[in-house]
Image (cartoon, rainbow, N blue to C red; front, side, top):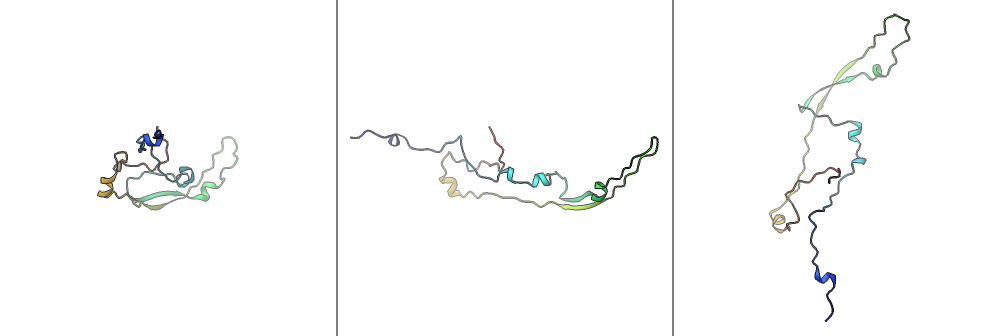
Length: 118
């Protein structure tokens, strides 16, 4: 009779301290860098838009000692925003729940951030 192999003496199980999930890399997403996320209290409202030409124009001139300083003009207008709601969920059926081994925590919320946790 042959000796048992390591595979004969061990049944592979699912590790509970390690799990892999795939998401988009935060390094590849640029929306936050172009337009940072801003918290708002209302779903819609107005925000100020300063005139680009006024902001970029060099309006100040050299002045003599004691002379009044130049008055800079700044045009401003408003634009509207409207926040849309987005939501997603994963369906867990009763059959999936019944079949899942204890190592699979189906009800545990998953973070969709690529932040490293320890």
